[in-house]
Length: 525
Image 1 (cartoon, one colour):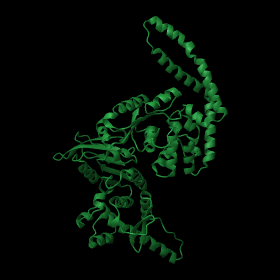
Image 2 (cartoon, one colour):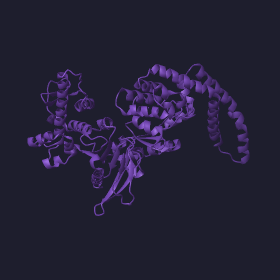
Image 3 (cartoon, helix red, strand yellow):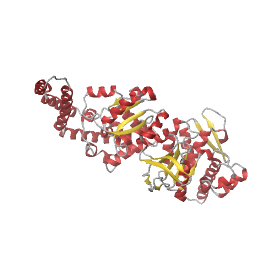
Image 4 (spheres, helix red, strand yellow):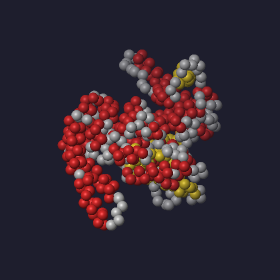
């Protein structure tokens, strides 16, 4: 969805493209973000649909209720009944509308059956509300009977009405139902999405709610930077100030919430969330798409090169006494030997047991999860992929051995030349001896023997550890074998599975973490 933003103080019109991702409007209290949001919603007209738990859970007068987005999607008799009954809040409206729709669905089913026609009960909005609410609050149940909603807890006989639910429990029902009732292709405005919600459920909840309406664009207004960081590749609009006389705003559009500018980043420190520095550009790289979904307990920040990741991790941890936050980094293994890998890990820079980020997508468990999700036989798919990869590696074996040798020689020379020499003659003599000391052909032949053993024993994991070849993924035919058209669709399928809470996301996350030698959280590594 293309969104034209309110007038910027700099005078240039600003338009953003959401590309299926959320939009987050952030700013300090009094910066004008609420007015900014109201102006944006007004400009979108009928496409704008607003939800606010603060307004939804508390009784309001009938005039304000009739102006809400929720009133617009409810049947007139429902709205009139609520107002006459004096229970003027949006949650009551939606609960009554859900019940009305359920009764209409059941009545249509009975009429069709009475006519002798084939009929089946359709899956309703109420079914989806109950399913997701019980997923968010395991051990709790929603019961529907005699035209009423009742709730109960596991192993308890007591049944009670929605009035006895906590604000958080009511807010979850309100948001799920509200989003399901939003018009098609709407811009759904959520004010203070973190309100009433515990941090442990907030991120997963909004990810699941967004998945209910992939046709809609979610626009959040918040001052919570931890929530902002949880929205993956959201476009972030940072509102700094509002001029009421000129009716314009001082704001900036940050293209990726994982790439927040230094000014805003200082505020993230106050969120007490550890930081994970990664390679890549923060928008298009696989790193920036994969790692935020695997390491959800971190603020993931893309820095570009591996050198920048290493330096940022070191610098940030050097200042730990100031901000009391943990910092880690992730870099590709590339052709580093075990000594280099252990050195980096000692500096809190994690290095995977595969050569590069593309190889993580080729892990056995990841391939099998994708294949199974697409209705393919995971064992057969992996068998064909592993044989294809090992065959490619066999053909490129000498070239790969040469590349590893070159890296090893280069690092050794850099290390040895770094000695102290009192004159040029000593340096010349030292360099002339290096060839015999380093013995590049001996290193090369050792790599060739090692790599041939991987091929002969069909050691797929060992091949992924040393094989640097970005064309490996498309050449392996893994996408087609999983029922996908190309590499991009295969990568997108993995990201989509990770975005959905469930066993598949957990299996992929665990496979990636095991690749870094982690069983649980990063600190354990």
